[in-house]
Length: 282
Image (tube, rainbow, N blue to C red):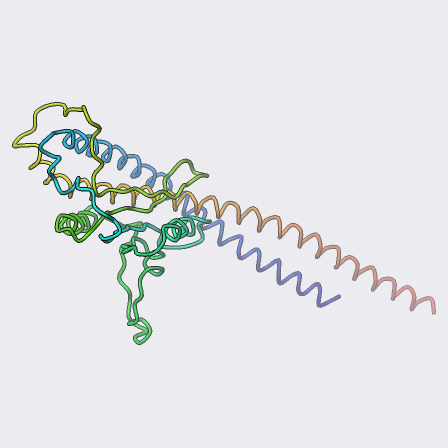
């Protein structure tokens, strides 16, 4: 019985430590929540503005000659897939949902990871096996900048124009609410053709095709950057909900173990009193 009391005390202490950890991580996630959602909302506004410009340009007859609207046989061309995941775990199914979406797409994908978890999953770096001090370089989803997005976009658009890529897509998490995040796939190249009969609004200078060629790298960069911001907001929200749930479960476990501990301790005390009384009677 003494061993049972000792084991219960050890388990209560363990859950108490976990409770402090999950509580602290929940507070950190809560402190990041406002800034992450503000950045996501601002990104959505920018993305809508640049998308409206591109949608207007592709309605022009001249822009139909652009290679960015060229439909290609994806079985021959390489499919580039940007996969956005988190830098850390302990955020529920956030990372797992992204990886499951990529897995369901099949093989033959050239994956560009953003976020440490995506980098670890889709990058095979043998140097770390030989050099313990070697640090693998990755693009953080939390600290991703527009300059990083533009550098990637410029490279992708050049390869696409050269015919080396069949299509370009992004796997990310869409923010629905603090409790709901949905994994999505957004294809950004080739650009979707405008419906027949629709015409552009306004007059473009110097000419629509030149403007489209110039703006597509910025458009692709904007999509990448804004979806990274949205994914990070999803990561923070998912971590906050996961930590809230873990904190609640840890509290319930501590209460149950404390009740069991008191019951065993009371039983031990009763047994000792009974033995003393029995010994005195003799």
